Image 1 (cartoon, helix red, strand yellow):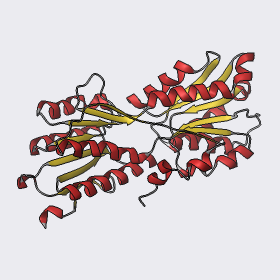
Image 2 (tube, rainbow, N blue to C red):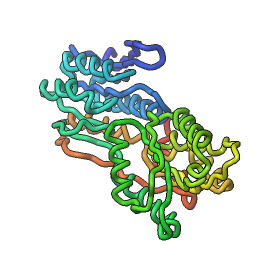
Image 3 (cartoon, one colour):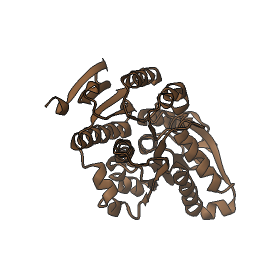
Image 4 (cartoon, rainbow, N blue to C red):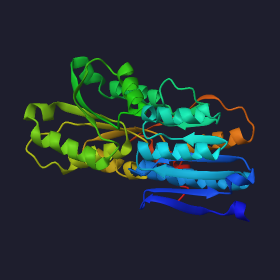
Length: 335
């Protein structure tokens, strides 16, 4: 049946930007468009696999038409929005490259009367149908509390120097940053702050530069690193592990967000080197919840408001149990 065809096309940049569709806009069947950034790092790549699978599977089960589109940048994503609006789709699920830069394009969806579900990176002061995201503020707050407990003795004695490695300039790192500093002790002092664009390689280069170009007293004063992502934390840890200079490193704790296998598998390795880790669960599979909201709209259900996905603290004391749990299992349920 033509309705069940699975087509892959619109290859705009080889290996990065594509779309698939089921059914036809001319069939009169209700339709959904799922629009996401391309895979610039591992978390997005995992998210795309989960989102692609869910869009196709749920669409075929329910008999709805569907489109799945990814893009390299804001301009391409805005063009995709133009296209689906002109096609008259019945609902859009949008993961913006950067929310505020997509404001005008997203407004076209709203102005056309098409329900809009925004995922992960918000558009500030925007009137969408519903939003779904990880609880980034709570993640930041809980990281701050963890640092307070971990460094309780040092904080009681005075200033504790740390580094902060952010993701990008979207609402996600803003919320994590603000959450952290709303609970972190005033005696924490950020010596340097970096923007990594969620890249492990960038974070590793930034950390290596800091270790190799900063004065001894500055390098040796750093006791912890607050990062906004597991891949970023992996880059920071690799730089620390590879350091062969003459300074004594005193970093005892590196934090992260998301809890991928690649990070958890190295908890024991770094603990043996004197570095503990804490991360807060933030699964690529939660994008499926946003897509389900889109299909709920097509089913005629009432969908509105902010939907926050709970997080879970994972550190050296419980990571093995976490890897046996539902969140971790679902994350790796798709090859």
